[in-house]
Length: 299
Image (spheres, rainbow, N blue to C red):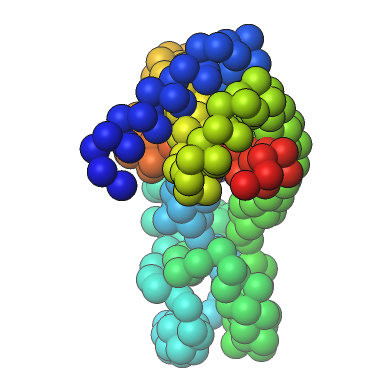
């Protein structure tokens, strides 16, 4: 395509958008709504995935040992636990150390534990770090097989992680359904916008065909028109999501200070989201234009 043909295609595309500005605006607004939902879903998914990663690094399995175990028995059990696959770190905590940590956690109220120094009810324990939540069941089953070697009880917070994973998966499914529905609506509206443009230019198109214009030359402005709708449909939700991300993040941090470390920064999220939205917007615009031309433009 030479520069003259390229200029003609771009100018005709903008002329079509301006001439059918109401339908073009409706297409852009609908597509923007769709892509804004994509933005929200993406931000939620990225940060929930980050939350799960943080939880994986923080969560551990605590194995409480039977009372009265000798040093040799404890060392034997530690050796057996270390042989379990997917255990990345193991720490032995004596009952005395556990009591001292408990006092530190209580801070000003630690004096209520003063009477327990001679009669410590806390057991010895092993704290295990696992490389991934997906391996917890395997490690837990192996620990249960060590009951005869001194394992009393096993404690972990996997239920909270599983609940978070369920919420994450549910949000992804609901988000995908909403996005798919709005995507179909966007394609239909873009389809109607291009169809109107084709119908209003039938005479011109017939003349172009008569003088030997190629199919690609005739289709070009309509494809570009759909792409422009897609680009504008991506810019608007990107700007809105970008403006809202930090205020919403700050609000959540101020409301729930414990989740301060659970958010990705704005630049990281939008370095991924920006190309995604532009790609989706342009693709939807091209699909809507192509379907419209194929059905209503007899070239």
